[in-house]
Length: 324
Image 1 (cartoon, rainbow, N blue to C red):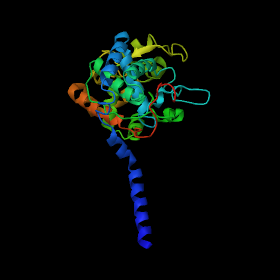
Image 2: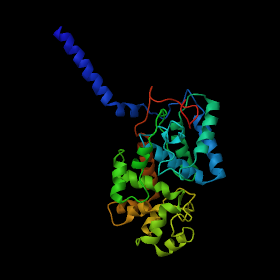
Image 3: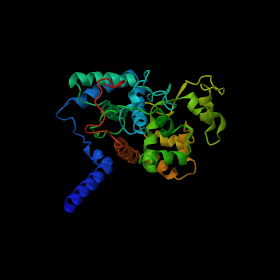
Image 4: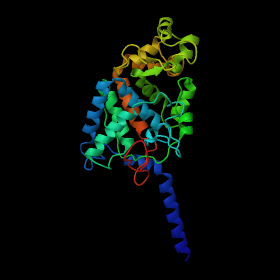
């Protein structure tokens, strides 16, 4: 009888170890060929739809990249950012970092519709977002990589998590390092991923304080931005400016060159080159685009591994905006 109890205890301990190691096990289940049999046309279907979206508006590539970033930073890359609010469900779309600024949901809807036609009920919205983010980068001239797949969609969302976990444009360098570190991303990952700001635009309300009150900014650059972003809060809040004033629709390393010239649009951008520990990384990326591209790809793959749902967890949503 004693030996039986020992065996049961051993099994319970072993089970506990397996469950506690679940994060590592889950990540290992993501593979680049996950849909090779169940949805062989997935990648070409997503690429075609993203090509159409970028042809209509180059900014779409940046918008989808940002959606993926904001999704992964809240309970992992689980498609939770795509869920609409309802009378009995509060999602992440109206959290402070997303309200009136997160966009591209219609693009994901269009891709999901096309994928459902090709292979209904097979591909998660979380995986569609991951592939679309990669394609947006590539279509704007950035590096290519094989996206790891096999995520499932969350049945929950966290507005409070979005409010607290997504780095704000007012973040200090130490706050940025901490925010990225909290999800397992290194300081170098953080700088490389910030390089995604080589494409896209920001709202006046996100950079007003910087262009009027900060001193570590190129004066001509500040004057240019002030022309479309009035000093008074509430006036022109939604007016847009490119994050990269030189080549806003091309994925390259100009973002880092701008930081060295004190032309970072957001406070959090310029913090990467402001006499701190990340100055040397910025210098490297500004002079070596191949190194930036390589590090960006590595960081994107690493970010895509944050707490995915796999196996029987979550669901495969039929509509990315709502639960099944």
